[in-house]
Image 1 (cartoon, rainbow, N blue to C red):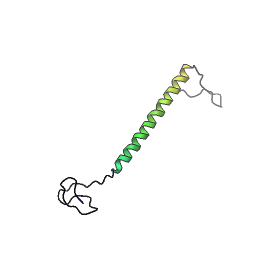
Image 2: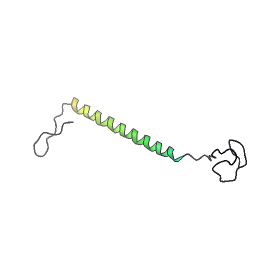
Image 3: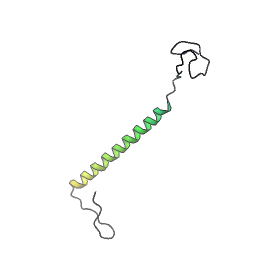
Image 4: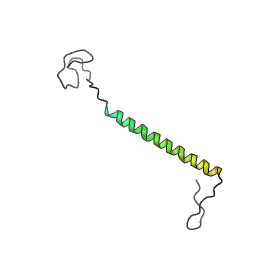
Length: 79
């Protein structure tokens, strides 16, 4: 196998070049890319759900909706 950096002859299956010390990447993405992708997706979902919550609250306030009463007859929770 040939090192992509120095073109030295490297044994098959080696992770580093014996001559220049550079890592030999066989097109496999590092695992942290998957973690970063998952974190980005979860962050985006959280932001979207927060947006929906505030949009619903604004709609409720514009409609002049009354606060729901609890089963004990007390006033409802204020958002």
